[in-house]
Length: 159
Image 1 (tube, rainbow, N blue to C red):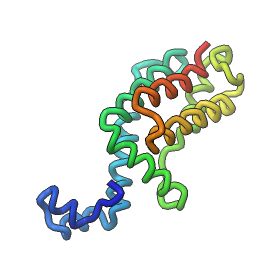
Image 2 (image 1 turned 120 degrees about the horizontal axis):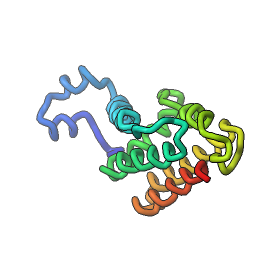
Image 3 (image 1 turned 90 degrees about the horizontal axis):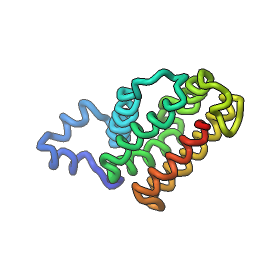
């Protein structure tokens, strides 16, 4: 997927390069749009639970895993492309640490195993998750191993 060109994309989808350029000025913009779509899909299908429910994080993990692993070959590339985009300052996405910190601040402290402080608990959870995510994206973990590690990260918040 990193060898994607506008010419190859145009040929595969049956459009002219000019049509694709009208919507996506660069291949990087295509990756960004696809990555944003994956993130939006995760947040659009949030568990129907209160943030204060101790089962919210494990349910959220299940939603995220179903999206990430639905087309893991493509999503792995998108994870790596978005990491490059964020590292160069070209991309800004939702910060999962902020989202989790907000969610964890409503969870009773006794359900935050690693820290009673929701910011610290969120940082640990996200750090562990990112390790699993980038290991999976780089091909060091299978989908099943990735799911196992992400569930471990989610369990850091549930007593």
